[in-house]
Length: 207
Length: 102
Image 1: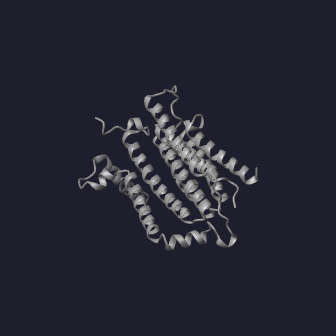
Image 2 (image 1 turned 90 degrees about the vertical axis):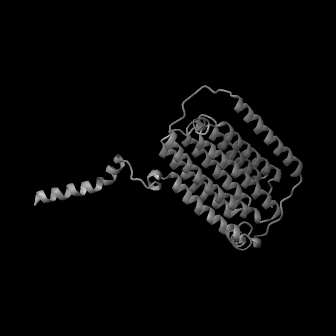
Image 3 (image 1 turned 45 degrees about the horizontal axis):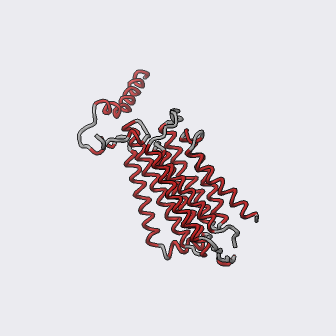
């Protein structure tokens, strides 16, 4: 067995192991442990991409997935202040049984399709000159053939950013409605003025 | 050329996809369900990268790039929705979110 194959098995075991640890107690009980476990899985996948000569995607995986998305997840988990889930006896409901059956069915279908289709596939030879998977080659394709989808993706990200801000905004009700906010909120809004006035009085008293 | 058989990579993708599917279907915490969706998207990305490697294509990398962009958008909007719902119901468990079921 070549060293490359051994490395693949180690990384694959890491990716699957961390993904399972995300869902199953003891790690899966606490959302923050789930998130950390998922980051481990993403790092294993990034190493696999690098092994498959997808250098740009390996970097993207770490920067965007393990960096941006998972930081967002950990931020939200800490913002919501979620502790470990209450320990309840593992109850087998009808829904969960059906979910297991459905998962096994989908996996069985995928596995049989792979076993039928992928036998005897040989990787194409890559030369150094082709620069397969590098920033230059992928970027050139991204900015020529896939120009329009690339620009649309930027619009999508803009819309998602605006939508996230609007959705997570605290007092959208008072921004949207023309009537004045209730008295409690009004007092809060006026609080800085009050402080300023107090400070002014104090200053006058001093002089 | 790489010594990893294509079938191994595709099977790893299928296993990860099944784990993500099981997570979405069995876990009741919305945050963990969103994380399981990320695992499923990663399984698809791995399959795309494996096929592009074995065909010598670059298009698969570009497609995986777009999937990462969509995943980022989905995570941002999904987490914002989780925050908004948490303010309303003080819960992140999917069983408590039944406003339409009166």
